[in-house]
Length: 339
Ligand code: NAD
Ligand code: TYD
Image (tube, rainbow, N blue to C red; front, side, top):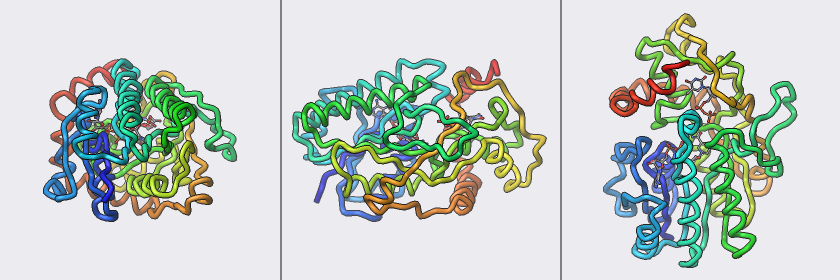
């Protein structure tokens, strides 16, 4: 059986992914996570005793630890989810983004190359392509769209992608890269749009919409991202990039209104706040390549996925209340205090 190292497996997508793999595939899964504010082992409590699963607390930037873990667990496949992932935090301070997203990827790549790992999949983002014009709906991101990231977060992810590509080109190292659009679903940290708005609406608080609310994001249910990653892992061609997306563009304001309506709250809860600096206007993914070449397609309709997600946050209030206390309050003060 293959020994799969998942980094960042205690975060939003990583924890959904670990559970998805254990339920649907035959891999031993080793989850390496530093447990930053975004990592939460509660996300994995239902599988923690699974004999095919092991958690190791470690930092992807620590060369010695990474080398030891790869050898100890005889890892043959790596999927790198570990990252600082929130644009607003990268605007407040970008150092951690460069350290984890760029240096951490380099440490993993070197260790993996030296130990002749069979496959390395880098989980990247559509944000590396920058922003699309709002009025030209026919234009979407393809794998050959130029890389023009506009936030410190997306710049750090783009740097990691380029480093991965260079290892393929220079060392013939077995790299696969996926670039997905915005995810939503259970266990997403309530600093990102959808869970934040659900939590605010449930708490009877104001919902802070940046700028004019007309920025567009292309939303994909997290499990569809997981199935896309597994498709690329098992069928993708080394050195290639695969976009993953659901062809599901929404104005932010319409998402916010939909959440309020579902929760029986009025639009008077919406409050327009100062825009995010450098705010990308529109993201939209063309996922034709993965659909055509690897036969992947999303399984969830947006209506179904958002209903599941809202229901999950209603039923798991203690989860999000806990992660929103403490340190989170300080971040919230810093990001929204002057908006
Ligand atoms: P997240 O912030 O919820 O989780 C990140 C995880 O990485 C956490 O568990 C954290 O503890 C861990 N981590 C951070 N620094 C680490 C380090 N130095 N060493 C080990 N572990 C560390 O992020 P997410 O939303 O689940 O995103 C996961 C990946 O998917 C990221 O690489 C992100 O760029 C990418 N991605 C996210 C989205 C999205 O919509 N959320 C879309 C496309 C791509
Ligand atoms: P976010 O979930 O942070 O994802 P990303 O910036 O990586 O796409 O934000 C999604 C969109 O929602 C983005 O256009 C910014 C906007 N937004 C708000 O309007 N208010 C908020 O409080 C947050 C967190 C985001």
